[in-house]
Length: 278
Image (cartoon, rainbow, N blue to C red; front, side, top):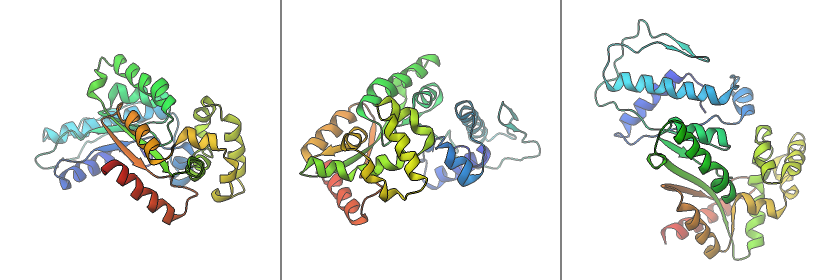
């Protein structure tokens, strides 16, 4: 969550984690929902795109200084952050590198930003295949073109939600909780509306003001669950994962996380492991 701590603190933590992991750390950075940033952490959110761009610039500024073992870190003067490092004597040690920054995205502007300035790009676990192909990847390519970058140089990692059952209807029912959870986040409305589920979104936002999540699951139609998760038999799910994975350098596949019994979720995880690992 890019806005809930200082960029300098994030940079220092990333350098330390990279050292602990022997140079295997990747920093994933996202805006997160506005309500989480403001309500859970009491931090400012808007405007997210220009602000996260500055966060990335500050991170790279610190990473560069640390990698060069510089005697100081240049001050940073942006629209949202004004940082002075006067009096700081950096002592990051040897073997510090530019830690890779991957940007997690839901909608097109963050996809473009990832194309402009990130090392990698993380897709949202409720992306539909249509959104990936028609909106997200084209936006990533637009951002790369704007910055004069080759999009092939950007790591693409897709997160997929899969629900497996010999009965496709049972698989879709299991995935309804994910829709009930994400469709109750106010800032996600445009994403759901683009898929024709704007009215469902409004219904779920209203319901979640007074009802717990598990009582909202039945408000989600099966076609919504099938749109935002891969649902079906093992063969069908495996084929769809293979189709989508062709557009990525790596994938993360997980079961539905909300409105599902923990034992059922564990069983789904084992089925996904079996599907992917054989």
